[in-house]
Length: 399
Image (tube, one colour):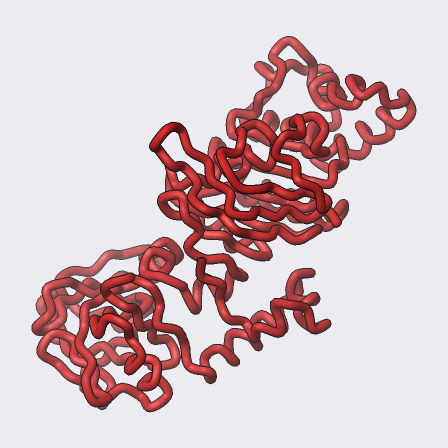
């Protein structure tokens, strides 16, 4: 099997730990995204897979074998770097086929593969140009072609689209998915861009300060984040996180109180520290001019115009932190009193001390499992066949 397994992997430079006790399996043929802010250890993790970084401790398995001491060239990987890493003195053609010639592949097979990737990545007519004569998007496609033409079992990408403009990134993302669906390599993609992670990945591993915070499908990462960091990192604008109190089935936010729905009470009662934070995504905060049983009051501070929607910043009564809500129309004015209705199906509860999620009611987990079930990608088709992930009924893995 062309899977990748990390067992208690640590990467450190002296006392500086870059990756801390990483345990993870990357399944054969899947698209896994390593997502996180700069310095979280995601690129180092990718380079350990490639053999470009030594492992301080622990074991890395590929094809069922420990590869800690296996040289980079013997691991059967293709890699696309952030800075393209093209040979400036070579033509597009020679950059693409350099690795194949180094492995003494037959000329007929080299030409066949070259023609295939030139057509796939729209590089026809550019074969004799040097990198300096290409645009940024063209250089990126050459770097991708050089990796794809090897048809390796493992396809590794280190922020390959970060130097492209928005339109090129959109097209390149589609090309990457198309390439993966054609050859089905085990693909590991490093990025700090949540949009790339959510659109390209079948599963997303969120890393923070050298630790893996969460490993799950994009929909579960968004709908059931494992920690406050995951909740804030995914989504734009990021999730509202507000300190609150809970007692006898009542949730107090500032000096306002609402009755917590029964499905949430066992979860709230089990909080280890007894200190709580509530999470509400801006797009799930519904504004109204009239109060309801599940609303809290606030005053509009200011409004941001995003073009197709509006971000409304609200000072919640009795609470120091502000809350943002997304509106498509009927936008309130600054200074106006407004009510924020809380949909308990879209609520998130966290332990304020550990910053970990307290979990989700069975009803919400069923809804999210159903959402994944009907997704068309290959990873979710595996769930329909009763794979390991389906057996866990869509619960997130928090490490």
